Image (tube, rainbow, N blue to C red; front, top):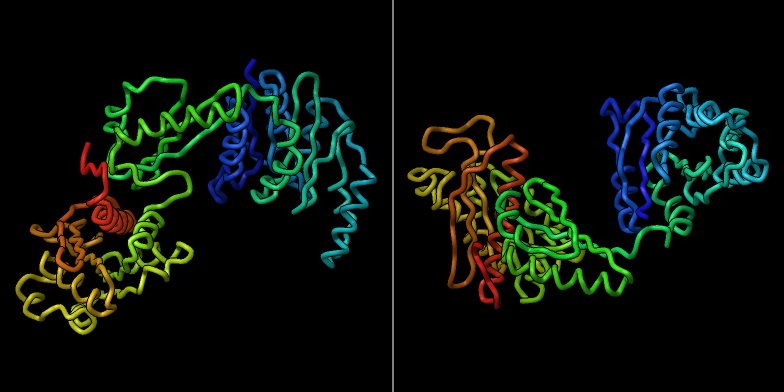
Length: 417
């Protein structure tokens, strides 16, 4: 029998959009790895009756219930009282926990207030879960349902799950799970579905659009971890063949980390000249640890004066073709390569909007160019969205063009499925 679970997120600030809910995503991912199916996620206000009723409903339909938030000492922390009212269980002071909490306060030189004793107030029969980063967390069995009450702080949720929840749940799920996230760029979800729809096997595929990319989560369940990993590896290779070069990475890899890995492997260096992307490409490249080995530097040339002074773009090009043109983009790429003496130069120039467009060069027009010894490329694009989306898309395409250039002579290169 497959174990079913649901997640209750307590916090008015989350429901009102003041704070992002990171806990349900983390819990769902961890439970899926354990072969446990999450059937429902509910966000609740800090309201005693609302939380009480949600706990009662959850008890009747789920074997495992994870509740985050509402375990503090302020008036809006109502989870403890909701448990008591929902199941008729009295709250008792856990003296051992109280002593540990007092020791933590003393260790961190925090003043002790009488209200802080609420941290040690637990439903009778509850089992304290270890929390190396905080004070809250306990497990409670109510008939055939196991409740896990966790803090609201995401870092604490992850710590309590690792230290107290995972050891308890390990082996209770159905089978062993292996999964891989496949990251694609340049294809819509519909096109990806066309390419892979006929691939059948013992796996599940879920789609996650992460602008401007599409991520596929490939999940396999089997009788042993080794079997699950082998099946996953087999189908991952089939997916990779179908998706071709549009599949740029997996799991924690990013477009910029993949480009960095390719540059490093080939002993090449890169510099950037950015106008409309405003340094975003350089920022992304330098987010990768060790990027100084292959990224020499970048110039944000937002004005014509900067383009001429820093990148050697000719005044004639700017006057006759304009700063948003093929000619300007290519001269920027050539100029930054010369300025930094790098193997490759990458440049962007365009109109990110929302104003500044014309009939010939509407908002979203971007020219992307790269220059290398003996070879160079410049392409015109039209991107859509707000200013931030256009900048992000331009930076992604620019990095992708470098990636494709670096892979061009590799076996299995496929420009388009």
